[in-house]
Length: 349
Image 1 (cartoon, one colour):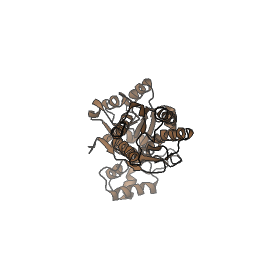
Image 2 (image 1 turned 120 degrees about the horizontal axis):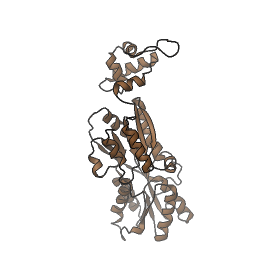
Image 3 (image 1 turned 135 degrees about the vertical axis):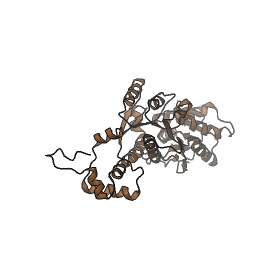
Image 4 (image 1 turned 120 degrees about the vertical axis):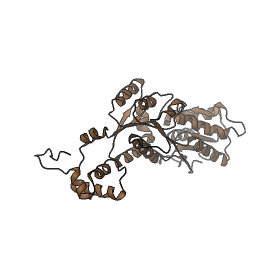
């Protein structure tokens, strides 16, 4: 039974029993409706939520955590520098999707950065202490031990991206990723269809699966062109605008006949466009450009950027849905989800 005394002078506050009576359901149904809605009909959910709103009911979160053995909080861990976190719209877009899904289930989002080995170790110790019900980790580099270590401690983990190696078989670890390989192929095939034969690639970091997959998509198409895919047609970047500009300059220096560029994200495409224009190359007449992402915040790129769209907000929601199901102990239809991408053609090609 909830304490029905409010802090302001002992005035009675609405209780769960009052919400259940108002909605015409049992206390158990009201509780489930207010704690995620599992095994509750849509009609009952709506009745309970309407009753809670009319009565001004607010759950006792501390009591609920004790009863459920949960904190009601999910961590979003970003393994990137402050510069990338606040300059690349990918992270904010993922967070929007995750937050929207968690708010629908009355779960709090906690943002954490894990940039250094010391910060990763601190994150592991914190997670092992169970202040979070689960963790979403995005932008994983190399053989980062953090996702597997947290999952091994019994805290469910969802990675935004692909999972390679032994971590893929850890029961408490899942992933949501875009079909980067197919998306990259579609970008380069589009450039080929526009008559481009000397197509360079500015990749993402090659210690990330996403960087290697988009590079492989480029290589699988360019290898079939006259001249093939020499190493000098690729430049490794770090997903920043500066890397895109430097990459374009290096590609032009090595291949003055360059007539197409595929960048592994839209932020680098912006830098590449600037460098091409400074070099006196017209886009798309001299050099056509295709990016990857199609995120909010990149609409201002001029000319309009042809790119591969990945549904990042929906992917964020899917990460949250997957993690919530794992927290509830529900079976997953698929632990490693791959989401399709779409080519969006604009002025740069």
